Length: 383
Image 1 (cartoon, rainbow, N blue to C red):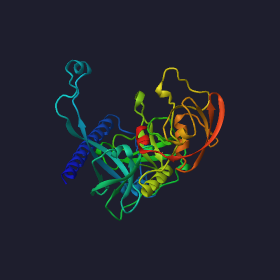
Image 2 (cartoon, rainbow, N blue to C red):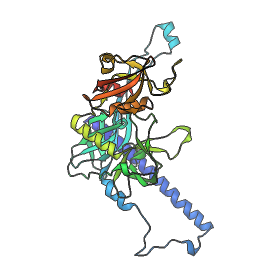
Image 3 (cartoon, rainbow, N blue to C red):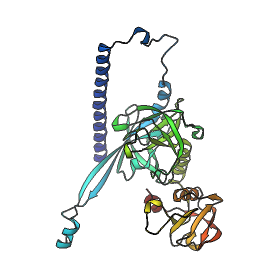
């Protein structure tokens, strides 16, 4: 009970901070137009007018349709920290730890989308990873404790459950029909400002290779998202969810480059988690070469991806695949890189047969392997 009181205090602090920020922004916006209008009044011909039959275009109906389905998430994680002496002092003194360990709490903001009337919702895995307590605030300011039903680190998604009924479940669109240039809106809880709406377009689809998650197929958008927006809804102008906001590009001063998990992928993963508590994916037991490793003497093969490791007792080990072999195709699909290889293998279920084509000591081979279930420790290590 004390822990939940602590997280309620965290919620209140976040809300107060958000309201204070909003108050300052409103005052600033009020002051600027007043100063400008006093110096250079607009000609009468440029003053916008509205009539009963001609109103300004608005996305308010789309926002109103989905807002009750978007929630704010407040998670706390308890961590233990040890004070460690510098290595050179360790050598002289023989002491590694200095004093007792310290326990402290870290707080996280996030967003989520309600997917069923009885309290299931989806968010990003990184929002609730290792959380001790999770509080969910609905759009009408009701607050509930939440528990994690299951998660999928490979796609950075998690399913939560709150004990509530009669909730407004979001409508999901067919994200395969999303096109660059489509208008989209992002709704979430950035910096504790719940139900914040931002506007943009779809910049691209099918983005990958970003090192955000192990399996990537993102919708790219320029709709602004910030800390606390993760797990929120990316919607179309009909108020349907087309994606789950998950990341923004921070490097090289990037602006307006944000990413969302497509609704179709999110829906399939949610169904798997609700059914099994996790996503069942095939695995063969191979560790593949990633260019970011930059191992001296290792070069990217002209075609396919290089095997850097084989886990004992796995289908790959039993089939005799060796370090240094090259995998060129999976089930007839040419492999582009290590990430593409993982996506192809993960698309199979445990027990399914996967055909690998490759090269062993410059000699081609074709082999069929029966996939096993991917261990959770492998999924975690890739994120």
